[in-house]
Image 1 (cartoon, helix red, strand yellow):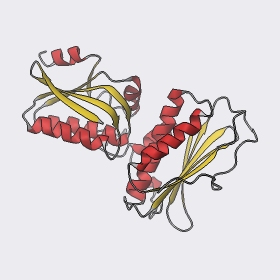
Image 2 (tube, one colour):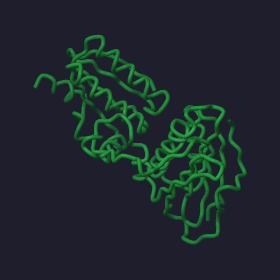
Image 3 (cartoon, rainbow over the protein chains, first blue to last red):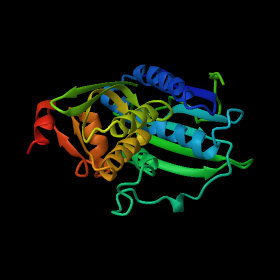
Image 4 (cartoon, chains in turn green, red):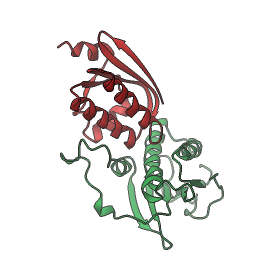
Length: 160
Length: 113
């Protein structure tokens, strides 16, 4: 059975910090025995979530943090990404597959997140900001296992 | 991401290597295509053989490259797509928008057709 996993990173809103998240994510998921393909698609989903938090949530203000939590809850990988922005309405997201949107240069990030993860939820933080929660069932982790704990009780602080 | 520009039989080949992701790779791609088209290139092939990762920003820049080239009277084609890049373009239905070739030889020859 894998070791309990819970990782918390707090990064400044710079795109280069996405690479830091990717390194920590990869290291964590490799330790769970995840295959390269599965890891790649989770990596893309997390990249998109963190990029959205930096670009749209925090408007690339390096003084604003993006918090990333990775945890195993039961048989699922749960990833939460929080920004300190003004929040947004998920209902405003356009369908990138619509003919009128197909050749637009943006608007595909959340679509990729939904494609590569099993579940995506958005919420607003009480003090402001958006939190996106992504879940991925991991083959090999026993359902209803006791490992892990809920995100939000981090034990590893990333650099800003 | 690194971009290498070369000419082959009148076709401008852009060899991309690394990650086409937000903040660096996407901008490098944009600049490379704009420089090529501004320099008079009308036949452009983007070689993706050594691209390890692409995100939505990178995909967006590929779309922009395609529309920029088309609007300027140039033709842009893609070749040597790694399977994961093919998957990313397929699920957003862009694989049918781009002119995609399995090999560089096929891509270059296609301009003469």
